[in-house]
Amino acid sequence: MKTIEVAAAMIQSDDGQILATQRGYGELKDGWEFPGGKIEKGESPETAVVREILEELEVKIQPKKLIATVEYDYPNFHLTMHCFLSKIVSGEIVLNEHEDAKWLNKKELDSVNWLPADVRAVEKLKRTLRV
Image 1 (cartoon, one colour):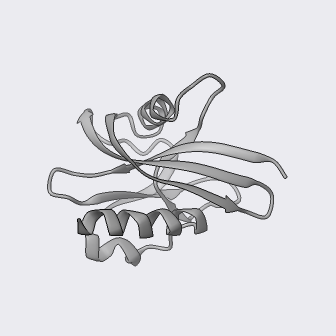
Image 2 (cartoon, helix red, strand yellow):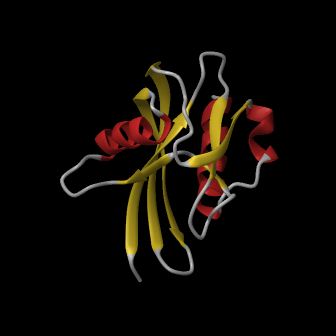
């Protein structure tokens, strides 16, 4: 089975809300996820997440803390996803690859239909936010 390694951003606003984005393409279209993308050869997960978020959302982020590394088997590939709690340092969000985005407070994190790998990441995020 093919393995895909990605970096994802759990972008947190100044008031503590977390950004969820809805996929606008591919076999997982319409599912909710943390934005991010594939790690390129020779690239660190931190560098990849900054680059991917700039491409997808047109904002520069600062990864603050690795919250989770999720391993998940989708039907056609194995996913390794590194999830970083991050903050926006410049720019305004533009949805280049997503069809929707929502800011969710801690109690609203279960209000969207997360993709399966992201469900595991959300659980780890909720435990982190309780601390």
